[in-house]
Amino acid sequence: MSETEPAAVAGIPETVLDDLAQTLAEKIDVLLDRLTDRALAAPQAGSPAWKTQWRGRDSIDGHLEHSRRLYVRAVLANRAGIGLAEATAPAPAAVVRRTAPRTRPRATVNADQLAMF
Image (cartoon, rainbow, N blue to C red; front, side):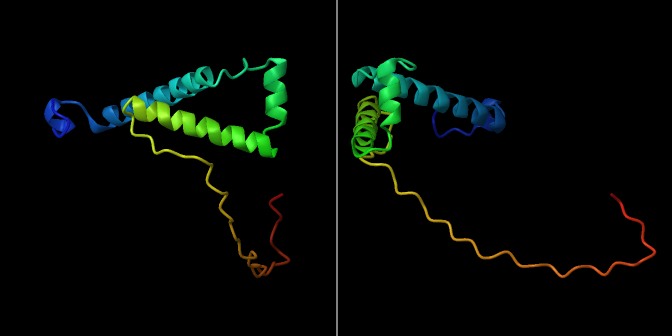
């Protein structure tokens, strides 16, 4: 089957291929994280050094380390031909503006109506 050949021609349902592609993407993501940790010589999860690093994640140094990690991850993906877009810093959090909830008019209550609860 070529890359441009529709899956239906090969006799494989689209949903099966979509599920398998999602599983593959998740596995690649986990492996890429592990290899990034190895490249950066990150401390083992749960160790005292890791806990210290975790507590400092919101500091300026923590943000710089996170940016460095994203950059190394993107370089690894690029060298492997995975086509991950390089990111030097996390995207700023989007500001969600919500309008005030509208109050609903109360339904008129009939005195003869029984309460449900």
